[in-house]
Length: 616
Image (cartoon, rainbow, N blue to C red; front, top):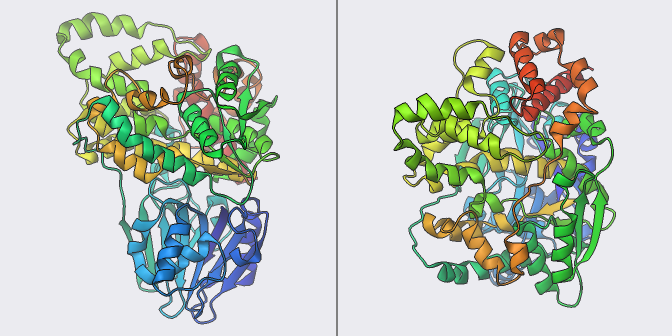
């Protein structure tokens, strides 16, 4: 796990600054390389996890010197690939997965990507041809951003903040990216908040030469649902893949543990890790809260006691929002999900115990765990209710329901369902996951009606079954843009490597081939719960989902209230190009308690703090 960067026409001074800005991602070493023929430079900062010796140093060159790679991530099947390559006559100088990746790419070209199991972002320089290949893993666990340079050049990096140090990149605000941020609370790929910087989307590669840039998709999730199996049959098919995914993520030459919330995803991972480790207990970590509605310590203890982990409870730090400026710097652009603060705090504390932690992110997307999936399946029945009854009676009544800011979202979800279930599927789903509607964004930004990026992705899936379309949409949007983004940025800020076995592509592809009814036969996470019953007691499996979120509603009414009053003012909103009357209306509605607008208010606060940081 590392930080990587590079650019054409490199100078030692620019490369040194890239190294400095990526140093937190790789505290175990740093190096750079400039090709004397093409002038292309590469930078690598190293967090040593596999092969801790100097043999794993990067940038790494091939034996003949033609190829040079800078790689961020882990290739979990590197040992098997090494054996195969040795049979083909290749010889290795180290035990690192980087050398295996480099050799495989030389041997098989771009088709090598299909052989990889793991998470990765890398740059491969061909010194003879003067070309560079960039590639990103299937679901976007590891980030990669790039920019065009004057004269047809290229720059890339693991983080936006690194690229902003490169001369010649257009750092002006991208208006469509701002609209996307307000809709999603993250800037949807391929845009960033800066007009001249782009994200390489998950499952994509970019080939650069002095003649130009070519981008293509090499993998995408496909929820086809063609296999109709009974639940027990499906579990028999999924369980070996799930077990293999967890064991793959445990391979490391440094201490490995797991984040354990007591929810089904992390509990299954902890159980399978304990099974694989045997008598050698694994370390597990739970964040605790003073607010009872957010605290999961009792559930996490129950799982730990059952599977036998060395469990540590890590209290959430007081004044978590004091880390807002550092959080924004880690992303390099506005990011409105406050869970990022929790992941940063948990990562900082867990890092004193382990270098690698397995986490349950991806379980909701792969195994159909979100309440909105149930809503999507109920929408067809809702539309059969006569419109005069829906619009004349039910919708006006539900619109009056108050919403809680205490962490319980039942009434808010009912209101959102009733307000949007009558729309076409794509617009309905977008309405459920958006935080500022198109009308609200238009009021804030002015101009024509803004696009709905999630609706566009939903339609592009082409899936007839609503569950197939919803899960595929989330794997292409919410998962990489939100969960993967904060997982990487906030853990790597503290040089902690997070691994995500539930996003192993072999597991995704296995589950995606199962019918929607198999995935959602008896409610949310039917399949994963059935698998979990083979590992855990029913009391753990059937425990209601809580979710890992901070008490933002309480914070905004308490400690954060002065900051909101200071930052969300007519002058500061005007500096962002936002209409004050629309902001004022939102704040009034939130303070009156008619709706829980905690996250939209937080998103505006983050946006203003990002703008202030750019001015500083």
